[in-house]
Image (cartoon, rainbow over all chains, first blue to last red):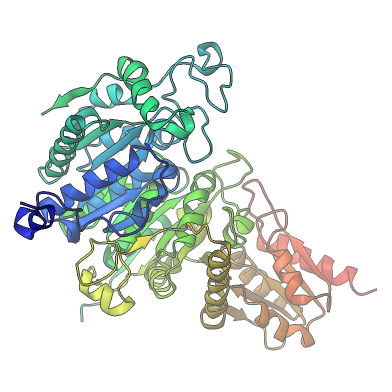
Length: 253
Length: 365
């Protein structure tokens, strides 16, 4: 059998989901955002909920998520996505509403909004990308930046006496009675990508069960911000991020 | 047609009742004096059991205004209420709402500032309401009620204007109008709009979930391409010009033969109305022009009166904010001055008359 003979519709095992647009992503090589976008789009496609889904994009690298996932979107002010999602979901309870937020957006400027939305038990999905740095503004310290990690605003490494400690916000969120599912995932190889997709799907399904908020953290890489090649960034994440941010479910009710 | 209902109500209470009756979909707010009765009344009336309206106490004013963004973008009639310090916290959300061209209603029951200031009435948020408040080139449509009846009427009117122009509308009230009780003719009850009705009336723009038959809808204020952003800014300018052309509202009291004019809105207009009566008893030909919309401002209405006027007094419970717009209208043709009490102090009609007489006296020479 030749290659040409193999290329037939009945032999197709994978294709790009139709819920992704044709726009070229602005993300840097090695960035995790593109992978997570694709997973969200696949879940929406597989659940057949494109016409029932409202996304809320953040301020940060994910701001243009609305250019890539082919659904209706709200673009929020920095950190406020959970407040937008709260109203969108309460006023449209038959819609799937999710926020897509980075670590600066969710764990720094938007701490109040995420804690209270989760604590009220809003039936929303939160996708939280933690790459321990501010990507869009050029690599400054994030609340989740590791101790000793060099960033544009911690050029000598994060010093706890000056900057305090990495904020384990997902652990805090898991304590809130308004959440039903809190998990930490990653997407650096096929196995973790598949696991992350299962988590995102479960979160979307939960949002129609009136069980409260579902929160999926994805520990990701920022090779540009970390000043590493994509391959080095993956290894740095495994060696440094996972000990501080261990993977797995924290809560699943 | 049901029978007309009258009730004795506080300004703040009637805001809540008018919202339910006009088919509002959601309220999101945070308690602050002197307007907490708005949310308290809503919670007591439990509209979620009757009309299905959502009422939610948010964690902050920052969250409430962003909840308005989330609700407005899905095409729902949503509103919030607060008082001056809370409105400052909402300034961020206001500029995003204006930038994303989303319809919503904000009620500011103004108290004295700056800072925590006082919980007593003031009109010191005029600049904030009419000149922006948040960053960037934008305008709110600002309605200034001078009675509890207008607190009622401007809720429905506010939503109508907000959806017509896809722009946030502010009711700029104050602690006096919010707290005082008057007889009110309640508005007729209207059902909440369905999604189909909104689309029929205002077109297809809401963020509700994308069917395969159309492109995705995005509620955003972001545009990194300068040329496109400039085009958008100019589109807003054209919209504001259209609003000014169609929606400028004002009331003239005893202006036909007036030689002297008070310009005042809200509480100050109520007080000045009495001043006009007192002046007329003394033979002073005083009139009152009451701006009902503060943005757009009734500049032309003031300008048209100038040929008959000797001087103009702007009365406002501030250190002098609206006087700047009065002076722009007057454009140096006649003397225009400000009179006001501040810090929660309310001027008496006699005190305002005294200010008018002093102004007349000074300009005799």
